[in-house]
Length: 335
Image (cartoon, rainbow, N blue to C red; front, side):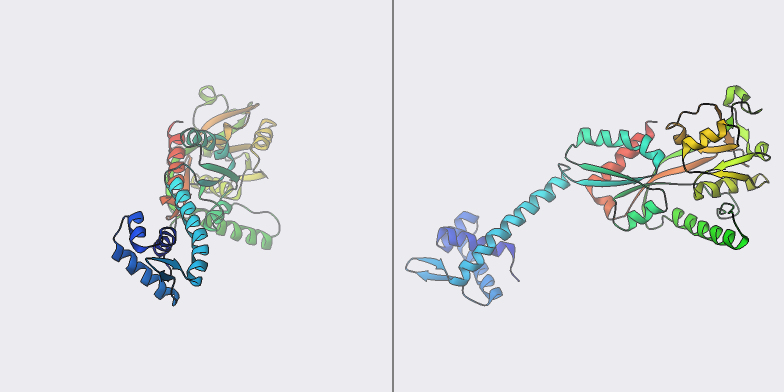
């Protein structure tokens, strides 16, 4: 096997014309140069130098190998410099995948702080909800995925949201959503960086009887909304809503389902139902015509979703990835 150190010796011998001069150039002994040249000749199974008088010159095979060695050593030097730049955070790349509400709230300050301190590190962002974002992480399409999950209520796994259509279609849709929920919340193979507990906020039409409670900010028990029509979001969010409502003894009547938060606000403002949204979502929309109230679970605790940054164990050791995780945690802590 040809080693880089042997190629460096060959280059020095060709440049200086002797083992002794090559040893002085490389800062080692003449016997060491001789041994390495013998090892290189053994690797290629042919003589590489020819003695001529008091000096030596390369054989034809030696000249051919030297020609390639020049490019190989230059490439190795460039590779070493690039790796050193990445390790020293003078360069590097971090690809983020985030769900929309984190993209508009947590990601901007985190990326801005990283660029201020390490402008050579490139950060890109693509939006995707879990479980798609987790599949992208595991598939090598990103280094960090921002995701969320809901704490499981005592007594069982999250329930799939009610489905619509024929009974057969409904069962198929419910089974698919249950599988998606399972994939979304299984993080056993990932490195998890907790960011924050995002409180869930109830949205009521401004004229709703409960809207004025404590200036519109008082807690509302879910059981008080049992007779309402509901507007729900993504399958994971709908499943959690069903679970929360089941905990206080009712199944929500979901008339509208949309992932678009401004649409949710518009439907609630028009008096077409009530909704529960993450607190981060309300920072990205204008809640005109609605009243936001805190929501309590069956245990009396505030309803929340857990927001985290996920990566693979090997990626967590990459300096740029570790720094991005630190900046995300800092952005969440500063809220």
